[in-house]
Length: 359
Image (cartoon, rainbow, N blue to C red; front, top):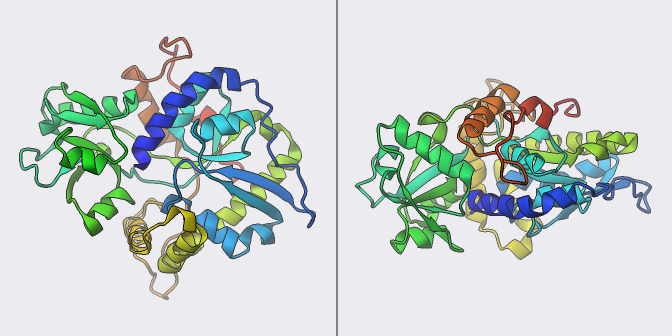
């Protein structure tokens, strides 16, 4: 659901971002509470899940307070986190590098300042019962369940070609439950996230057969998910100071989650009661994050020889991997301006991101 939700929000964002570009992006960064600490607002990209666990840990364990900021976590808006940050509805939003490329192409002025995922986590999956689909080559001629994202279609076409198939496939609009769309026979394959929906399928079914795009010819890392802010917001020195405090505390929260995955999962569930998260799913998701090294970018064991946690959050944007993917999508014709014209050159990862605020 995460992957498809993001794709849908991008389409909605494209409609309003050219107008949103005139927003002041002030948000709550300079608003001091009764305790004298500034309050920052953070907007999620989807319903709470383990991608957000470090934020809830930092909130619950007092890391934000220790750093000297108050943080208000906002549920995702229909228009998406990108539009909300651009308009100043939120100071910071959960987004990803390629979404910012789309948003900025339509008039926004956003920058990624923190990268959570260091390895691709998107998966393209069919039901395991579909024995006629053994590799992405077999996606050819099948029906892709999608929200109509040009980015996703370009990746699937490349995977099919790399596997030795033709680039033709049909599409069907995703419903509210993509698992149900596949089991109903209305579609043959769809996009999922390895650290949430793939885990959900392993726990509750239906079983999936999944393929990672980077293993099938798609270059770079398409899934640099993290925190985005508006460039003009960064011109205020107080905002910059507060952002550094926020990122330091958030990083501490994610490091705690890597060292204490079960406890962190339980905090996520307890702090998001209205989302009714499955505690078993949250724990299993965190176990997969740690085991696969999605946040550290490597396959380190859970513990080092002296018993200390073996993984620490990387948090920085890999612009080399990001540019490879942006170039690929640009060459596929994915990025267009607000008039649906192809951009004169590929979006630049170095312009869409910065690592200077990660401490």
